[in-house]
Picture 1 (spheres, each protein chain N blue to C red):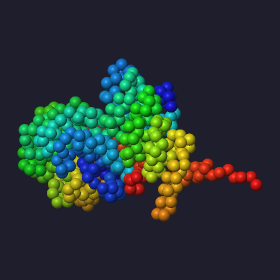
Picture 2: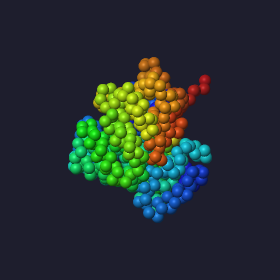
Picture 3: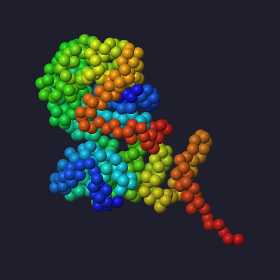
Length: 283
Length: 205
């Protein structure tokens, strides 16, 4: 089973996770820029973070044969802090980087006027830089959050097939299904979505435009739940090809729209000399 | 390595017109390098160049872009390094010996050698590392041994390796022996060469 996790925050994970992910079949990941739990108060802490997403973290992933790409944005929570607003001015130079395959995570947290502004500005950046957009949907008041997100997406002029709305569930799947946008599902140990529920959604709505991710981060989460979902699909009668479509070909197709996805074999399999600084525990 | 050799080795890139245009624009309008530099991997490829061992197409094309600037090579190199992703940083490091900048690029070497990204450490130890003072250079060589960077990446290795580096390598070898761990073969061979060189000539009897 080859797995592409289209949403996982590896910066918050350990090398043990990378080892277990590689053993489970994870060969590529996309790491969206998000908030770090602790609020940031200056632009510099964002640019250091973004630099790590296009520098150190892809190197770390490469040691385990995992290809790493990123999405870059000012996240919805910190869009509300005036001190973070100048981050928007730094984004254009990151959106030209080779490893950046979308603008994200953008969208809503509390649906404030500040979030409206920052969401719309970043969708415009996605259009300007010819990149897809990765939209986080809010955990509170989710249905209205999804409806409002879809309205902002439609107004921006970005093509719906270049947008994914993430963290969907039974209440929001149909809203997005009918728009032509992609559908993201975050499989969590107890919140968001579970493997058995995901299988039911795939039975009801098919595998087209469906993305399954672990969204693993610094909270209680599990980077192997993509694999668990693939196994649950097989047990429920889906074919190997269905699983490959959901866990590999769909994310490749979605992020491939950036023109920057690099999944050459060398990158995926070569156990290069470069690995040793991490595999041996650093210098 | 010369600019002409880079240019010749890049003849077969997938999009030679893009590169030719970019080089002309950068020569005429230096500020445009900020736009071209990050796109190089997508336009020129990232494979090894068969005619230029040790260089990939993106590294060579980025080095050419830097070399075609009309002025302020040091300032531009620093900006592109500071704002670059790992591949861009690596290309700037490899370009340094081609640029008329004297010792102005040394802070970039220090930055790269501080990282744990072995691709950057290796790129910092090319010919431009002659600008590093001996203590910094020895530390960097030792870091290669620690992190598994082949010593073939180090320019002027035998010419610069001295008794102090031999002492550091010997201490590392002892530490590894005590821990039941091995030394990379190229480091052991270097230590052997340095030890042999420091032995007094056998006296004739």
